[in-house]
Length: 406
Ligand SMILES: Cc1cc2nc3c(=O)[nH]c(=O)nc-3n(C[C@H](O)[C@H](O)[C@H](O)COP(=O)(O)OP(=O)(O)OC[C@H]3O[C@@H](n4cnc5c(N)ncnc54)[C@H](O)[C@@H]3O)c2cc1C
Image (cartoon, rainbow, N blue to C red; front, side, top):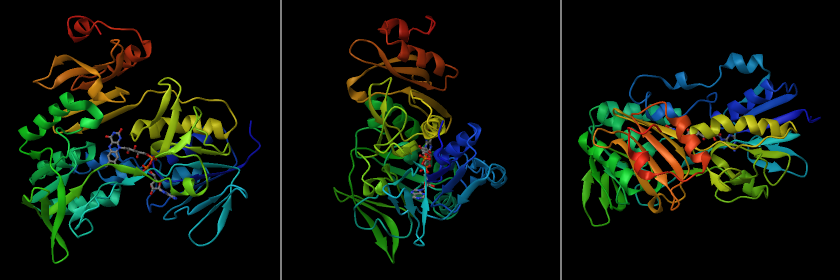
């Protein structure tokens, strides 16, 4: 058990909220400060590009815990406040007003921000990114007025916004630099499933394109110019080219970092009094036996339980397999596992690819299951997990045969 009684959580997303919950659920009765750069209480982001953009939910519906919950659990929440520095020698963090706050244990849960596109026009009015509830509100406003949208980047967020924009009646052109959407995450074969899906829904998907410039008139985006000089006019442009972890305060504090903050199996950083969770945590994963950094909801949901134990001086290890999901039009999907390079894996499809009702498996050269993706097929995640964790070679033909039980 720890004698430390002053815990600070820097960050205010799902991971931060779950960590506050986990500390209290584990009977920590010391001080907990949760300091968030955002003006809103921690909320979940997945609905922002799905139900909220489809008009089925509001950002408030995605709030993790109510203000009353934080009061009841004596969590001191400081919103609209960015932690600007960490002094590990004095065990204090710095706040923008020049004050400092001391900690016995510190958790970094600072998440990510959208990557910027280093081309002319990227800062013009009418150019959007999506990370926050405020960004979603701006997109909803744009959906009401714009007729045409160019989406730069066919990753998860680009494609989910595309589906929502089509639902709102916009003409959408999606520009992707690789040969298929989602290629880095899923490989070309499964990326093609998403290419077909969007084209069937009237999206002008252009692959292997390079955007040279966002064209601007009177300070407002008017479309894009491609490297081959093709021009595409649009009322609005969404830049969705991935996220960048917010690790500057960790770097400045001299913590070991990569693209994220390096943490061990129990989510401790190179400083034993500091843990890192969620998007920024580059963890030595005990099952996958390698470092992984996962920018997905389930990670932010589940890592805090282990981080809380570590802060409390108990032993715990985060060993869950990566898991994520998406919803686009009538396609619902869950993905479990980890494939370092999907292009090198062998994909086995079980079910009907044409009807988009199937499970895809990624196998290594020894026919061991690395990952599984169920598309419009449900309640198979546990079995996929078992196949991965079992680590035994499978018969690809039997795996593909829906008459053979999973
Ligand atoms: C639109 C959208 C849709 C998504 N959909 C899915 C999905 O369908 N499935 C899925 O698995 N994942 C999805 N994700 C990813 C998932 O939401 C993230 O992995 C998750 O939000 C990570 O949580 P986090 O708490 O680590 O970071 P974040 O949610 O990024 O929260 C970090 C918080 O810390 C604040 N902060 C940053 N720096 C500081 C500082 N120095 N001081 C104080 N506060 C700071 C930030 O402002 C932010 O509020 C989606 C993400 C987005 C943006």
